[in-house]
Length: 201
Image (cartoon, rainbow, N blue to C red; front, side, top):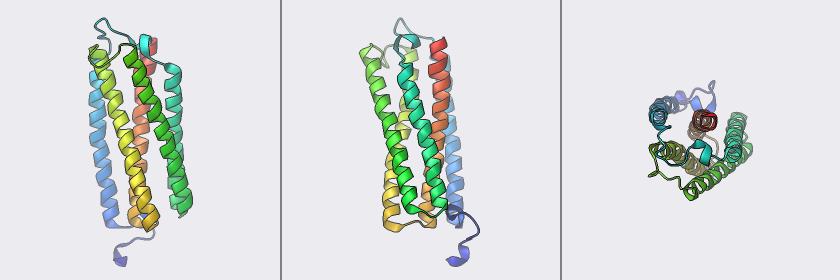
């Protein structure tokens, strides 16, 4: 087994299996890009079809969305710090920054749920118009991915506590980092092309 470990590489890349898993996850992210690109394309076609219902300007709470954006982008930074601590072989620092990342992600989700509740109270539901259908599906899909990421990271943190920092746990942490950064990039596109573009018409 030791012959298959290349200690000159970062811990998460030291085994052939880890390198293949990371490559496979990059391919998976390619499929995720196609998924979100499709949802963005649907939204781009339907975003002006209000059917007499609320428009962007009627419902969007831009201040709250700005806070959501700040939370998620900060979580991307703290996730990067977690990877940095992993490279330093500092398990305590790694876990601490991961927990902070997840708390920021949970704060984002909490605000997004409140945002959706606000929209529903304003009479904006998926059934109201094509605009709102595409809007809710795009944001809901991203929110579901964030929820999955939080649950996934909690499981890996538990493994990290039990098994310590090994090539396997390091690989899992690194892959979660890739996933989390991907979700942040998707949110930047949502914030720009859904919220900001919607506010300026």
